[in-house]
Length: 402
Ligand code: ADP
Image 1 (tube, rainbow, N blue to C red):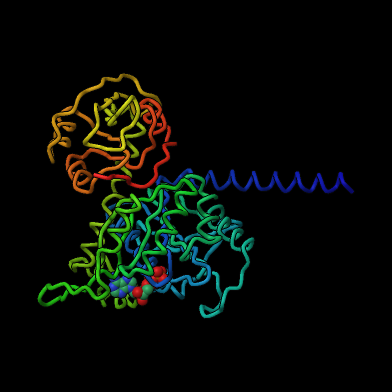
Image 2: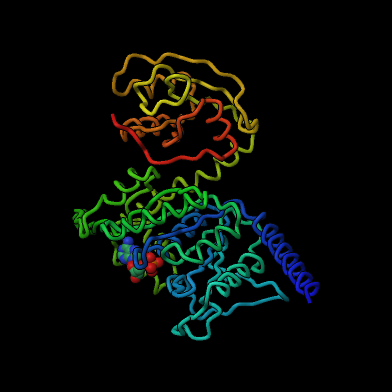
């Protein structure tokens, strides 16, 4: 009996490994995988996922959109695909094409009646998500955008683990305090899984009058941005309310395409710029790009007080060399607002690893195309650069008391 149990366990493990290998093979053909998350429902997460996918497709990327919102799959409704039936060849399921560059898969295509409630427990959800990754013929894609259910439950956890190394998550919120409180949980969830937060989008952020262009802040605005700054994650932008979003659903044409000249569509396009840049960054990182990293130091270790440090350790390295190559210590110019970003830019620095930093300084570095990593721990410059290059650098909150 014991032998039988051991054998069954072994076979089960083997089967799991085979399936994970199959997922790896499929996912290996997709360059970037991005999860769209939200702390709570109704904030426009699916709307953002659809328009993000459509915008990337319009920019000539090959895109797959996967809807794993098992309890409320809304992608088929937003794209007016509710009548579509899936086709399969053997074990392979074909995704539904929306345009030459965009294909979609949703649990909604598998439900007989769209009003049927889905009563599935954790293991069943896990199986169906696994099937979406393993058995859907995604082919070669530039991006897979995953619309996860709201919250930080089974589905986002399963997908993050099954994909193994997603590029990161986009967190959608509305400006109200309640939604923002939930976003903190989503950011913590990403941190626990070691998944980068690509950024926060504040949706339904004011209404811009189509006639006079005046903006009215219906729910107030700016809460998402303050929260992003406080949690030390990038803020991608504010998307205004536009009643036409609902009309776009009826037409089946993505809003961003149908109303491309509206304020809201333009805001969507602005917000996705960092995602388009992923493609550029990844090709740079894969190559032998030279990097110059600057770290503020006091007593030989990272100084929490950027701008008031004794010296900067300036370390040269190479994108594919996984370790620092050359270090020089340089005294900064006298403290004066706005001076450091220019000084570091003139020295050819393209990455800064810091503990805390004020918002204004961060903006100036962004303008100088210098990447800033904030919230790094107090450690030696060499350890920090090695961790950065090996993608194991742990960052916390932006602690800046200046
Ligand atoms: P979630 O996925 O977070 O539950 P949805 O994307 O389904 O939210 O959006 C909820 C509702 O809000 C939908 O009816 C959608 O059309 C609408 N909506 C989303 N974003 C906007 C916006 N910026 N302006 C107007 N309506 C919006």
